[in-house]
Image: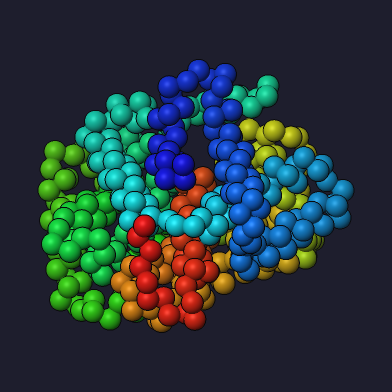
Length: 441
């Protein structure tokens, strides 16, 4: 069942279009109870077979973060429902981690193939949207009904048609998804895992996916991809300058080939250079992300430094504190700036304070440590690829959350927790840190 969810998550919008609006909310938000049901089945099976449940240190950090969020809610005398809905985006896919580490066997090859097939579909769809803009409205997000509240879908009509988004509804979510899956797949290609003689067949997919990332117009994703490339260069010693220039040359050829017949306006290229102009920086300091970093963050640290304003109270869809969101609850506008939700680090501090930020950060710091440890200690190409893939994802997501809040985006969060689950499955199911046995069954 977990395998089918790997495919479902990025294709959710397509599935929702098959059902009337009145029940799309049940389907969209029913995934989390469904994951809980799967985990409960595992718990019952473990009890019957008298086997211990595995939680790992990550669970301690999740518990700590949840408690700190609760303390913040109580200190601020906030609505308990807002706390539950506010903390939910941070921990909802933690269940993927729990399910995976408690399975007796996982088929990593199948997981990898499903992720790759879904990734191939999304890359292809994005490229098609460049040539056939009508596909943008066809694959736009569906509205969902939550109680009496209608959460509207549709894509951003104020953007040029060149802002593609696959089936993920928004160009930035789509771009982030492409970058994260690209960085997960790439190590498997570098270490020739699962491929042997047909290893080079994955290369065209990787190159075309880079072109799709360019077409998304997401500046954050392009810079994070560059950061990922630097980390790969540091980790993968066999990546010589000759190989780098060869891959870059192939990428340029693919880009030129796919640009044939596509009309690009000057604004398409200006978008990537604008962020370095004095006008852009000045405007950003007034209202945008730089304003959040240099003005709102100091305000938060002076007002509520340790526990913040409470989960869900600011910078959250729950209370309408994000761009384009519709409030489920009307609360006091502690910080009336929708760009707060575009700076994930600050939004998290605003909701849970520095203590909550540290508690949540421990999840990723510990995962970084374990992934680097496995990468260095193992002789298995499979384990080395998984460890590198997660390490790269964690590095770029840290950067991305200075200009987005993608740690809570559904597809990004879900796949990240799946990767963490696979890594700790390896850690918890190998002896003496030898990591010398592939788990393919």
